[in-house]
Amino acid sequence: MNLIFRFFNIKFIIFFSIFLAAVLIPMIIFFARSPVLIVAEESFPNFYGKERIKNESFTASLILFRPVKTVFVADEAGDDIVSLAVGEISKNPLCVLFPLRYARSAKLYREQNPHIRTVLLEGRYSEESSPSSDAVGDEISGYYVYKTDVINDFYRAGLTAAAIHFFYEPEDRNIDKTKPGDIAVFLEADIPQVKETFSKAFADFEEINRKQIKKIRAKKEKEEEKEKKKIEKALEKEQRALDRKQKAQERKEKRTEKAPDSEESQKKEDASPPEKNKIEDNVSALKETEKEEEAIILPNIQFYASLTQYTDRPNLSCVVLVDTAVDYFDKNVKIPIIYFSWLNPKFMPKEVVVIVNDSPWIQAIPAVKMVMAGEAKGLFLSKFLLSDAQKFDKMTLRKIRKTW
Image (cartoon, rainbow, N blue to C red):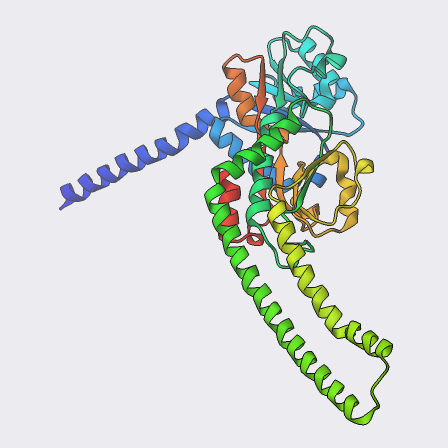
């Protein structure tokens, strides 16, 4: 019995040791590896969200299997202070990610630590431009310079806008549903190909989903046709009632009055009751609506460089905003918005349905992969996020997620 007990006891110790080693060894390796550092100002978490930074840093750490840490510096800190703060977090990081606003600090840090990989995150600029050169100088060959893939982001934004345009129909939207609705796009800068890319994405989405869109339109047309027939029948019924009332009135006048002269008689024959004219106008309006529905097929996509160029459009189905047009929120218009921003969703109006985030924490994973691959230049994709999935029905939600 003692032998059996000792056997199981030894077996338990062996299995427990293996389990402990399987847990501890990866943790030891994880914390022993050089970290990835991201520079940010101290006030940034107040706008971005402390929990978002923690969650995104944790996710990046797991995927990269090395610590991803943020170096917070005072908003007014000089270049030497920023360089010193980075050194205090780690003497030998794998790489340091500097947003464009810290380009001068990155230059000083690289001069002091030439063996450390220094990454410059330029943000949403065209691939041909080089904003880092203004701060770092023409010689940026020793840096890793990465941009946000604004062309690809706007293509996906165009697909998302098309999904919202064709499939999303909230009941409280103040929009004429007999028309397809316009799209307003506010661009941060005049980046070549963005307009063409966005429009192409819209056309591509319509082409891919044409059969389904036609079915939806056909269904809507049937429903609208039924509704129009009901209105027409009601109007005809009302018209017949008015006609009977008018004939009864005429018979009564013939019995009680003398025969009117020919001129007055002609006036009465030509005159129509106000109610009759109103009914005829309503029928005419219905027919005009039918003509408009047949004529309008695709939305009108309007691009603006700033809010000052924009004039209120009564029939918008979707708006695409970059930070430069944030004043649009003051209009309090209940129209779905695709917002290019890293701002905390808690601070955004409820009309913002999709957020396009290109913050450094989102970019950390692809940046490290490109650094390890030795790519001195590259492009990032932003992360598309639904601010509130409950705003959409299942079909619209499925269509939107497919575009990302």
